[in-house]
Amino acid sequence: MSFADTPEPPYTAVIFTSLRTDGDLGYGVMSARMGELACEQPGYLGMESARDGLGITVSYWRDDAAAAAWKQVAEHLVAQQRGRDVWYEDYRVRVATVTREYGPPNPG
Amino acid sequence: MSFADTPEPPYTAVIFTSLRTDGDLGYGVMSARMGELACEQPGYLGMESARDGLGITVSYWRDDAAAAAWKQVAEHLVAQQRGRDVWYEDYRVRVATVTREYGPPNPG
Image (cartoon, rainbow over all chains, first blue to last red; front, side):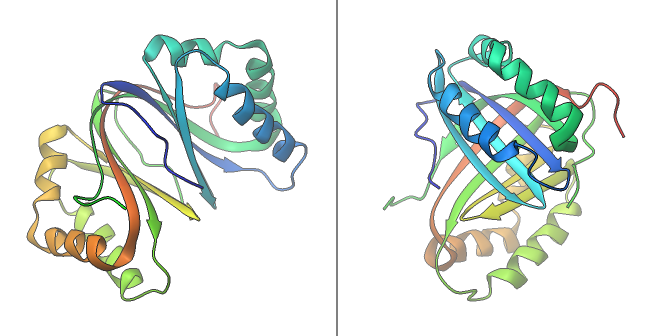
């Protein structure tokens, strides 16, 4: 687990919040594969993810067009459908424009 | 754990990603208190949080001014300083404007 190495804003963040159904049902394999596939997309900047009960995955993109293109990648469309049908009890997707980013005053 | 009940966009999301230091050192109490205090602020819309290794907390605000005002609340300033000094190994704060939100086609 580490921080996404994002550039100077502005860029796009897709905040995906989810509640899983019980059991794996192929979710682990799909999740790893989608992580790999996202990395290969034009405009991909990074991803941060955590789950304890609620799951939060934030993916970062050069712009809204890059994020929208990722949503339409064929293999991802299949995963999204399977997510709606099987893996997710409920979810929210929020598309946002990051305008400011900062870390500790003395990093490291 | 549940979803923030946010209104129609636009609104502001503050994405706080963090790595904790070892040990609690008063973090649990502070974290609960900051959650309560945030709820009481003008323009607060909700919060979503998860941690497994990486922690991600997204707080939602009516606008950037409301988010900026929360950052300056006295008790929160103390917590932020203690966070930098003791609780967080490292962190990132990203302030973003949510432009689009959606959930499942047939919610529930």
